[in-house]
Image (tube, rainbow, N blue to C red):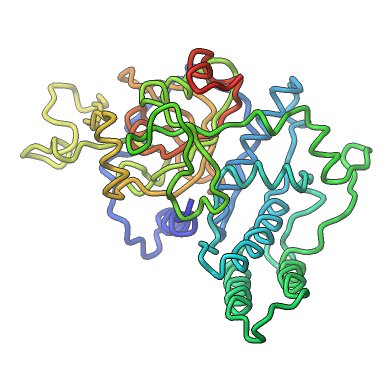
Length: 398
């Protein structure tokens, strides 16, 4: 998810009213009323602030919901709260090592992928948020521009190999920068009176990290095979199973209906992805002459108080592929899909937990239409138990 910082900056500007360059959206939360169809437990909304770490916030939020389900936790006070910056720190280190091994031919940036969350947790464990905030630089929320620039400058200098032979100590320089900005990782910490290491804390969560698999839906690879999404931030080359669009959407529905949630990655650059909590795939070609309202919803005979549905694009497999090929669907943002709702017109929406703090009309939550999800979801991560058995059979996963 490469544009988390840009997206967040635009959101902050929109909410503060300060020099926002984004054009006003033709849809607004005030015109919608939602009714929950199915909602699964999620932990409280967090704020990634000035960091491109949506991939980690959404990925760990997803794992927190997995723990809630696995353990049957009913009391929100007992919900897990994993440290995002522990995963970010370990990911940064691994990425630095690979960047140098590949002589700089790797995207060394702030974004990443859900597979990174899973692989980092497998390798290093998990830590409670209270035990490690990962912010030693004097802010209450992440502000990582200086850290990111410092790390990139350092690894770029190492890649130049000025001694014509790399030393054994350059990785300690990466750790030194990370220690300065994020703090040293504790070897042990206490949660609810129990002492853990990061590895033992991970193992105590009641989940199996091997149970999580990615899915996507594109025609430039054969269906029912795996491929690594061709986006810069998938630096670990995490694979996704490629399935037809109808099955891709069926996985999201089946997951929610059966008490699971979904880690969602995709494009949020559309005008219909508003800063007040909506994600709607507006059909701009359906604009008609007349008032500005008519341009987007068409002429209607309803009373002024009625709330007509905006016209949406109907997404096909071919159109979804076109978006990806022409790069109008890009790897922008990661969020956490946890429910299904309907608006006042009966249109289906997915309930999404964002990581921009309690912003917008729904205090940090978004409603994403089914058509938006069809067209603009790049990939998802789910528990394999949340996948219909007939699809698992087709891909050979048990």
